[in-house]
Length: 275
Image (cartoon, rainbow, N blue to C red):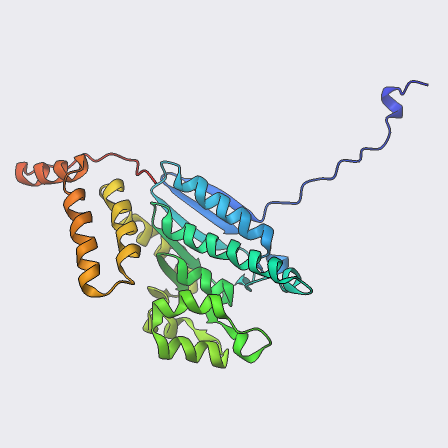
């Protein structure tokens, strides 16, 4: 017997889960917002994949800057314990490899990435802030890598955090698990600055505007070279920087900058930086 339009069998299709990362472009700046406030913006496996994909897409675009924000009462509570409970070694390894890829993507895309932290960033959420190129926090924000007082030490978050604040302070955070307030985080170098809560939007907008001036290509080369040399000993760092800077002096934007300075005019740079 045929099925009429009013007698369709029930659909077996399931609605796709709502996006975990909201993407919004305003002019030359893309804002990526963690958007699972009911889950405390936990970095579940699917969230990390989605954020990595979004970062990669922005990196391939002509956007000049990226803001990483979050909705809800927590910036990010870190890894989702449900992904790790009962997991095999291979599954756990895959989870942290995906997390590492996400953190590396932040630093590999050509645009400056600015974390906009309005609340608590803990464990891998703190790692996320530490991995961003720059970070601004509201006075009410807090930062913690609390594994030391729990059952799983924050091994991977400590990689990023220790590269921002130094060994003693990083180990204090990791071993105590205590929350560090935003003022202390700024003093220690985990974030660039702390501002009153109602000034966070303006402070981030101002910083993004200032770090996206000039040549996009020159800036992208500078970001890439910074991460390549920052972990090297000084002689190796200089060898790398000399080669990069000599090559960078040859690019059209550099030559345009020299000419504009000598001719006392405003330079006209290309607007896109390649990966």
